[in-house]
Length: 201
Image (tube, rainbow, N blue to C red):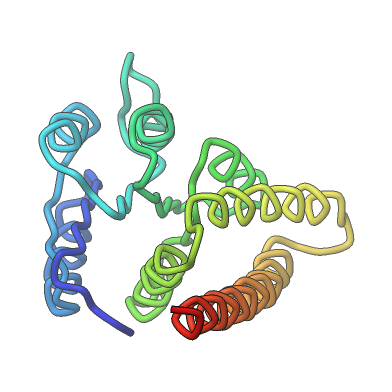
């Protein structure tokens, strides 16, 4: 995975042990990382700094005493930060949780407990999308398509949560391949047009 040194990541979790683990791990990946223990502290940091990626727990004390502080973070990011992507961590895995987070603008989610390699892969996916041509439009298209697929999967009553998550991961991989191929085609077309213009001069 390409690791641009200027990538900034914010980790938000009220679990000190997990927060420290993720802080150390992300630093090993050569990213700039900061951590927050609660929603107000996180929002203060977000206001002061620009983050490329926010990794937040879903189930922690939020604003007005609610128990889904991660959703408060998502709402704030969706309203105020157009270039920041969110990975939602949840210990209460269900397809409904995934749909709820995605509809609020999360790029991806990860179920606790998780392997650090899985988180690294999700960070890598975000960075790959951020490198695409017309990345803003592509990210919006990805999220819209992803949400529609989640809704369809939700209707699959014959599948349990583990099966649904595995199916969704497979679908994600196919979506990634599609956008990657589209980007390569766009780059080739761009280079052809650029060469044509150079040849006419």
